[in-house]
Image (tube, rainbow, N blue to C red; front, side):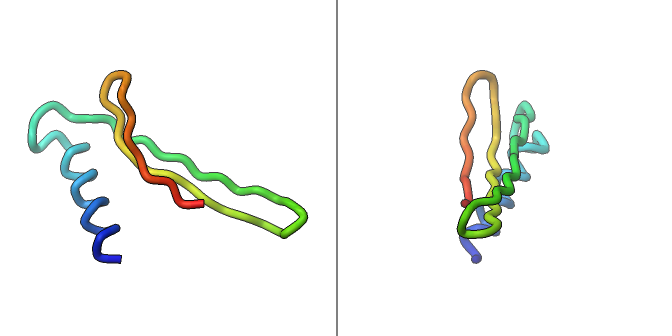
Length: 58
């Protein structure tokens, strides 16, 4: 849990531009319905030019 909060804090700091040019935050949320019931997931990351780095939870 602490590790996740630390990663999110670093992403927020980089996205605000405090350490240089701002980078663009990226995220998505997915909800699915299948034979096993409902499933949910998502991802959060950062984008700068053609490069995107993120972490997904599904």
